Image 1 (cartoon, rainbow, N blue to C red):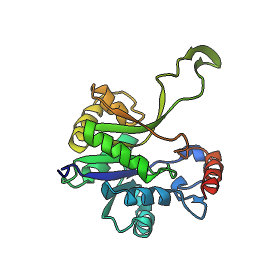
Image 2: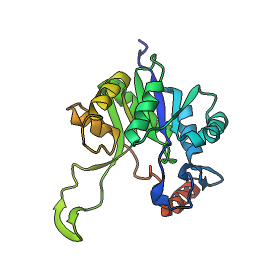
Image 3: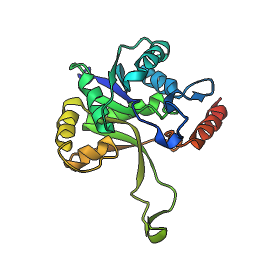
Image 4: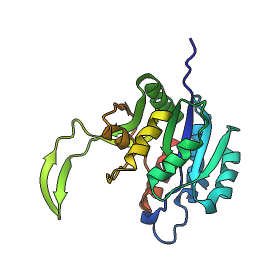
Length: 232
């Protein structure tokens, strides 16, 4: 029996990139092995079998540039481009609202994770189809300590810890309900799964790879280039 579930991707590309430095410009347009960083993200989601539509969220001033990249690397997938909001959650909600109603689920993704693979997208989506919500991540292998004012307070057991990545996949209508309610709170939500958790909803963890890195600071580009050259 064919599943009635359908998934669209919401690629969040509206961040300021402040930690990359003043002269960086749009960090997602930086060169990575001859192509813009975000082109790898667009390509991975466009080629994923469970993704039938893409909504890309960016700043007004960058819409033409992203439109060109979607036409070049989007594998002819239908898409829309929308403007971001003041905060990340505003941008995500703008994107999710633009997803056509025929889609039951949304895969929310950072435009700054160029090493994401189709198989990781697929297994996260399939987990969300089964359980309602699922998040890709990697279990922690380093020793984690709680620190305050340059003093170590205690060691945190790492057995139950994982670093969250994207995609983070949710039922579309349920996400909008939770996000609308979350806007009325003063809580700082650092990812979309945190919104679900706030309202007591279950999110399935999907184990991914630790090299699904997010570009945040300048040295990340060199690390990603080294990984990509090794893959070649």
